[in-house]
Length: 159
Image (cartoon, rainbow, N blue to C red; front, side):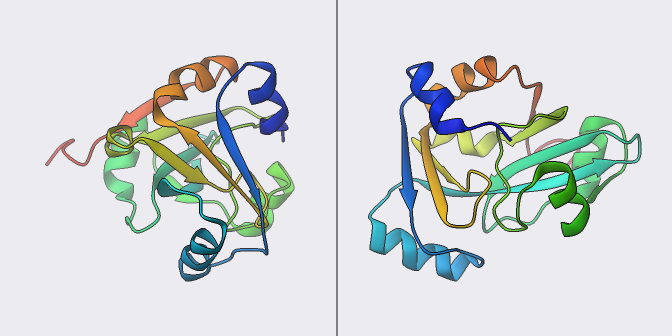
């Protein structure tokens, strides 16, 4: 796992990094967000595996259920959530604190297109006791810097 704060600093990408008690639920996240004062759209990153063996991250809203049928159609293979044990072994991250960025392994990032309508994204950078905030307008530079392959997901696909 790459050190995102270090990389963003080197690349002059705006970010906020907060240190706090570990967060494991959406309810805890709301309390810590109020305590710390950070602002932005809360996100979650689902670590997925395709039937083809490739890994994927689906970046979406914390309150939104993933439509696996549509996601599978988008990438062309059946997707499932990776077990906490397998994910931790591959990424050294804890369940509930999956980062959308910064992998040493090949991961295709699927971004919920609705997130692009917001100003700031709030996410766990791989640790449950850290929260990072980035500007949506910097996503293109972040993804280019990290050389991440991405797809946009829209709920309107195949409706």
